[in-house]
Length: 334
Ligand code: AQP
Image (cartoon, rainbow, N blue to C red):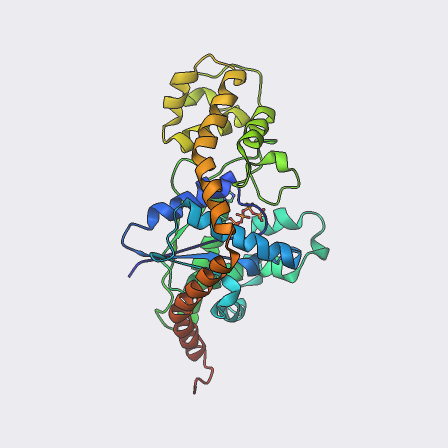
């Protein structure tokens, strides 16, 4: 059987990158007739410092964003990771399967640790093994993610395969990363070589789902670009990363191809293009942020929904993790 699992860290305001690369696609998968499990990975978020009240607020905000974007808690399992013990428990078991050499190759750790790697948390290093546990605790088969998470899903496959091999079982299915759609890598508005990220110190580098129309227009107006007019086809954007990113965002939001977008703006400058882009973004994101506000007006209801989702998630994952322990030779007598 097939099962979709994916997650988002409540480590800041969700961005346009999270929306196009993840959330929007989560919603599309909800009607495929496959079970969908979506997790707010608060235990991943604490791999870098989060003030407790901020983490709580960000988790509710992310839950509101999921529902505002179209995730229906009656059709998808929506919960926060820490309420389901299987994640932490399986993560330990898999820590003992994953190899140090594999972990050392993870580029996200290198990017996030930077030059100061002596002083980051052990959790940041172990993050990919916890992500493997998130996926494998549900025997998930399809993992919709943005381009940046591909390496972690591949590591999950390696861990699953080694477990199956070492214990002579066919227990964990090897999950497939599903990286598709027009915007699997939305770039920073300030630097066309960096991805848009919710933890970038510069708020001007990203569009947050909570930004109002004026803020969105202003951030696009200030977005870095070159001075050339727009070409007639996507081919002409090859060596223009900032321009390509903006055209790509427009196309992903409007549901057109880059060529279709460019056929409307050929020869025009960014003075014309940026306001049009802001209009498209506001027309898509405006209703989402309005609905988010409605959900956030009742935090107790959000917490109730997450608790209910956690109950459903636990019903799937607890037996899988118990079986894992048994396979590994641990006594299972209760
Ligand atoms: N810029 C992006 N373009 C497309 N997809 C993206 N995703 C993240 N950034 C982009 C996808 O969103 C999902 C959730 O990501 P995450 O919260 O687990 O962490 P991340 O990938 O590290 O994203 P951020 O926004 O950069 O968070 P921080 O700054 O906290 O690390 C994933 O499917 C991811 O691919």
